[in-house]
Image 1 (cartoon, rainbow, N blue to C red):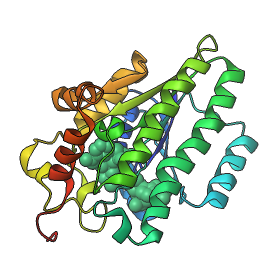
Image 2: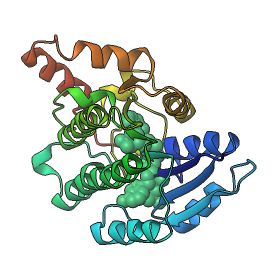
Image 3: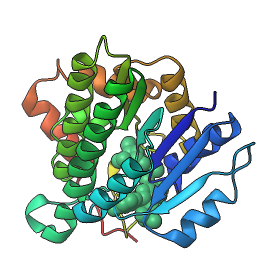
Length: 263
Ligand SMILES: NC(=O)c1ccc[n+]([C@@H]2O[C@H](COP(=O)([O-])OP(=O)(O)OC[C@H]3O[C@@H](n4cnc5c(N)ncnc54)[C@H](OP(=O)(O)O)[C@@H]3O)[C@@H](O)[C@H]2O)c1
C-alpha cells in the first residue's frame, strides 16, 4: 500500500528535504507552501515512482486553510503522515517588532499547526491509524529573550504534540515533536527570522536540512513523542529543566541579542 504524506512548507529547507526522502521512498506526497512557482520548481527536483502533488496555500490565512481542508474532506483525503513543518521566526525585541510580523508568526506556528493537527487527529483517530510530526525547535522549553514569540510558539508546538500523543494512545495515532538546533536553510535570513549578527550562529554549529529530514523519516518509522536532532539540541533540551532561570535568561539573551544589524 502506498503511504501518503502531507508536508507543509515543502518548497525549501527541511520540508523540501523531507519531501525528497518521502518521494524517494515511494510515498504519494502532497507539498504545500505559498509560492506556487517555487513549489513547482521544488517538486520538479524530486524523484520517485509517484509524482508529488503541489498546493499553494497561505496557511496563516485561516479562511484559505479552512477552504484547503474542506476540499481535502470533499475528496475523502486523509494522509497517513502529516508533517507540520511550515514556520516563521522573528528575532529582536518583542516590543520593537512590527505586530504584523508577530501576528503572521503566531497564525502560522500556532494557529495553523493546531488547526491541521486537529483536522488530522480527528480523521486519523476515526480511521485508527496515522502519524503527525510537528517541527518544533530546541528552544521550545526555554523562554528566549529577543526570540520570544518564536520560542513561545514552539513551546506550544511541543506541549500540544506530547499531550495529543498521550490522548491518542490506543487509537493507532502518534504525534511527535521534532527539536532541531540551528539548521542551514533560508530561515535565519534578513527577510525571515533575521538571526544574522547573533552569537547563536557564531558559536554553535548548525546542521543541514537533510539531517533534520532524516530524523523526521526515522520518527515516521518509529514514532517517539519528543525527538532531539543531534547533540546540541539534546543538551539544550536536556538542561532546560535544571538551569536556574536567571542564568538561563542571561545566557539566552547573550545568544539571541543581535550584536550588529544583520547584513
Ligand atoms: N532553520 C532553523 O534553524 C530551524 C531550527 C529549528 C526549527 N526550525 C523549524 O523547522 C521548520 C522549517 O524550517 P526551515 O528552516 O526549513 O524554513 P524555511 O527554509 O524558511 O522554509 C519555510 C517553508 O515554509 C513555507 N511557508 C512559509 N510561510 C508559509 C505560510 N504562511 N503558508 C504556507 N507555507 C509557508 C515556505 O514557502 P513559501 O514562502 O513559498 O510559503 C517554505 O517552503 C519551521 O517550523 C522552523 O521553525 C528551523
